[in-house]
Length: 397
Image (tube, rainbow, N blue to C red; front, side):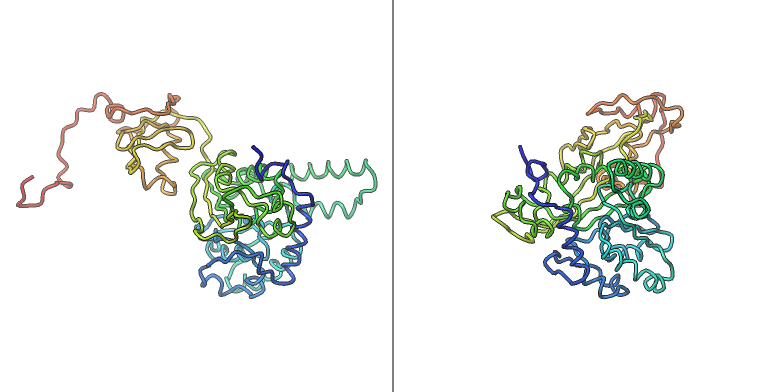
């Protein structure tokens, strides 16, 4: 089946050029049609210059899902609105990096850095030039090299490509495993269909283990028609490049994310074209399910309400049963920031097994652990916990 993500349905025009020109104009003059109305917490807008607010184009608010002290990367940061909101939320110990390809947008974002830093009492923002589908290549370093080595022959083109490879390897724009949270606000849909798989791989690469992505973007309920795909205004207007709803979540899954969830899906479509509904959706996904499976006699109990559920690794958890899990899965399901922890009861072993003594876990999709495995076969304790007496004084049980 051919979908809107397929190169066979690629538009008959230069997507990157079309998008760049539209957003360059949007940096000069406000473009209301680029924006899907979004409510932000007003207290974080108070210190922002009006120009940044007016020339921001988004469809959601991924800044709601950040914690103090985190390092955050904003893909397609534009004039810096989301970055400057994040700067207030992560505080002086946090860091915010905005990546954009548009010089006009970067110019606006950077010119207000001293003013906003003075208001906050600290400077924790950085704006860099790059393509969000290639976060290894610092385009300002590329431009510096090109200025000194203009390309006038095939040989010089080869030298340029070698220099780009060197920069990616030796001084990547965004290093591997360096980011706590990646956000993006209505930008992923602007990337060429052929680059979208690589884009999601880049999201994954830059995140630390346990990090997460929170992405707001435009999705559609059916594939865009050829007529929509071949309308440059609809592409730069965040319509033609929209992800089909279910495919959007699968893009995260395909590169290794887990705990993928829809945080917000607008009930009312933003636009309806040729019977196809286009709406804003915000998704969160986590990194960190790779690694060895070690046996430490841990169990979990799924609380319900579903009779059983299946995780991203194919493990099936039955309601109310002690399910045997490896240490990696146990940590994923029960740690405080886990997307699952409100539905899971952790059952640690009576005697902890040190990691260095743990053996390989015999992984099964559905495995129930006997209580004696958790407690130990020689566990014969008999006691009454007076501090947790179920009867109040004067009552009989």
